[in-house]
Length: 141
Image (cartoon, rainbow, N blue to C red):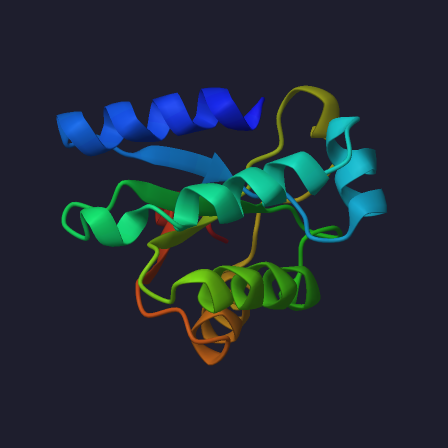
């Protein structure tokens, strides 16, 4: 998205009490390209831009993030890089780790394991994030 459109969206969120959610799929550009068909530079730049505005309204947070824990692709290394990036911007940004369930194009992959989710949760906390949660826990195996 063009940064000026992001600014408008963030202003609407700030004024309305809403929030903007970024799905940060992968840190490494080539992995992001393999999973999504696009590079992640613009998404990361936009996230950093949006993060500069969150101190204007800390509660409820106008910016949140999540990552889907795709087995074999998104692991502690990827989550460590993503969460270090977020924590360096603002450690209070809420972040959710989402369990993966095989569907559509990735139907040959397993469901996210509890062990992977816990390791990634610990990695996110170690990176300095203060508001981390595991989502879709009913999908974990």
